[in-house]
Image (cartoon, rainbow, N blue to C red; front, side):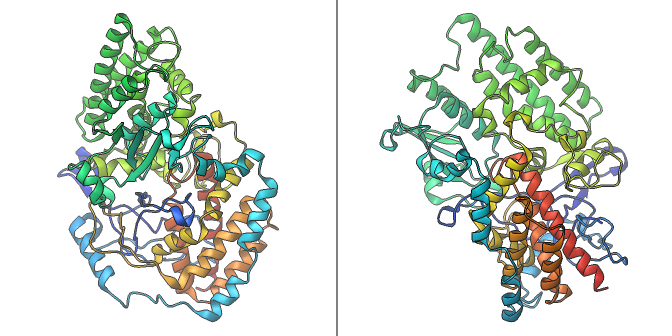
Length: 576
């Protein structure tokens, strides 16, 4: 079964020999907005959200079930094929969005009080989940929210201020860091890592990336072009990422040094930063084009980076400690590893031809300043196309793309990659985050904490999957800050998420909880079940790393949402 939520494709003039350019498309009920899962309701802010995975071109929202009583692939949503070609036409897709937004009769948005009362009574309650979670958490896990409020360690994308520990006071903060709400922007990432590594106290203000919604007027008055990051340091505005890095180095001489002070070190750093720009260009040339020489050019640049790391006296570019050079390289090397696998089938990690590059990645993953900002392949590969205007895919990337999107795993055993039990390293696609020293149960607890701490807002967000698109549309077709939720599914979605949390905490008697839940929701009829499925899939496909949680927790939550989706799809099939 293919996913309900899909990307649409536009083809170049000769798709047979020039490849395909994938854009962020719109499906007729895929309303996207910004929501940070981790924040308590009083602190929720706007952020970009991921677009759903691609399967085939489609704008249909109805689920077409298999004739069998049990779905063939219960974690995947069925979607009718688009036979009219509208999936390849961005303008027609946008027009479909306008119709959806203005049509008051597209589906019922009215709650069913009798049905909702029945479903709301199905255990567990959120209080039960909170109590169960508390008994299982470590002391450090229990202290997570209080530490966030104080600005203390451990570092998290949730922080609004960063003091690190009690030795720093909020009134002494000299830096305000304006970064993207998505926790994804590569230029923000290098500033973010630098602040953390130098342990400079700072205040965070989050701003949308341009593709995903409007920026506050107050920000545009300070930064008329709208670009991020921006930093205000001692009352002075710095609006370029590199300028911010060097200002931090100059204005906080007592902090850790990241720029070499000796002539040889400065000369080597300058040469490496020129190489970084050449490497970036080679990546862009291959990722966004299809010149037959582009892969060769990229591999030559990657080999040069490998040789520079081999010649270094330590694991980092300038030796045994991290420097500004590493923070310049990392945002794009991280995105290269994800995007070239997904779109081109080129595996950078691990690759026996580049052992020094892999050793460097491992060294960076020992740094809290980097781990805080690290994303996953899924997030990267859905963030890049709207930023770049599209990425050219090749057939070699298709199996990796499918696995990263939660589709067919590479193992060849006819299973989907977002199924439980999860395979190590996403079946050989993406390295696990073993550097966290976090076992599977700890990852599950992290997922439950993030979900249960803001459950009401998350339920409302998920219900946009069965709601209506907003007006006006924004540049990124699947971002929809003005979308509306379907009130009719709120109680049912809430109930499923409660059972998912209990499942994650290991307190479920086989499938009994899901079976009872599917039967209860099924009393609302097939269309109601379909709308709940759409809402759960909508949420599942928009779990962002690191914005919402770290990758191990995100993998667990995506897969366990699929368990719930599978049971509801089975109930739908039973009605046929």
